[in-house]
Amino acid sequence: MLGTSYNHTTESPATFFLVGIPGLQSSHLGLAISFSVMYSIALLGNSLIITVICMDSTLQEPMYFLLCVLAAVDIVMASSVVPKMVSIFSSGDNSISFNACFAQMYFVHAATAVETGLLLAMAFDRYVAICKPLHYMRILTPHVMLGISVTITTRAVIFMTPLSWMLSHLPFCGSNVVPHSYCEHMAVAKLTCADPMPTSLYSLIFSSIIVGSDVAFISASYVLILRAVFGLSSKNAQRKALSTCGSHVGVMALYYLPGMASIYVAWLGQDKVPLHTQVLLADLYLIIPPTLNPIIYGIRTKQIRERIWSLLVPCFFPQSTQGS
Image (cartoon, rainbow, N blue to C red; front, side):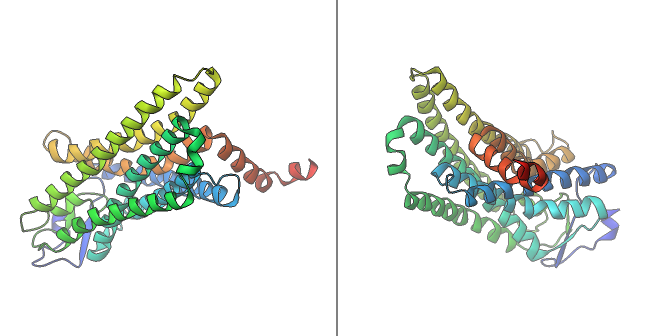
């Protein structure tokens, strides 16, 4: 049906048409509802995290600064793709302009590159807090935290700008139907009438370098952290340190496992893994971490949990606060 509805182009098309999840069109309404719920949770949860940290003067430590930036990046990452996905799934509004498509692609790549850098910074923060607690505030000063944030963002821009630029400047003379629910790099690259291998290799190599180096440094940090934790004499201190690190490890697993699976399945498992599985995996990679990150930190971090509770209770139970 798609093949007869949309024309082929002889130059860069003015519009692309996103299929959604090929083979799962009958499930699109259910997916629209599920993604809407997850997106609402992501917006509400991450907005609460940002609001609480910015409003509370006691939450101005480096760890909370990084959590605040992570929440902002999660909002950008989810907002780059989910509203359009829901529109496709619910109403069939699957057209996207050429410029909007590549803007979406750029924001997705940049946000994911920033997020992996933030996870590395959070691991370093935990290393300093646990292994060098007496020097924590002296090492992680506001200027250092600002420098870390700028470095992470600059790295993302430097590595990811050429990726979108290279692909956007290739000629598109074939179909303008993208077999995906957002402008995913590999799916769009297959529509070019030039050899997409250079831009595809750039994506794979530099994604592997960024993620691989970050994961290596994160692993090294946690080896040192665990060595320090199990060297503590107090069992209570051990439990507290492991609980804090557990939140970070959970968030990292949510981010890296689906992400790496999505990247390498698209490259190595194209003929073995059904297309709808590949697309769904890529979609969930962009919506599950922003949805669950604030829940994990809201539940596992006592200070944030207490501040959110004190913020919400007067809104929903004004009489109980007046009575007390």
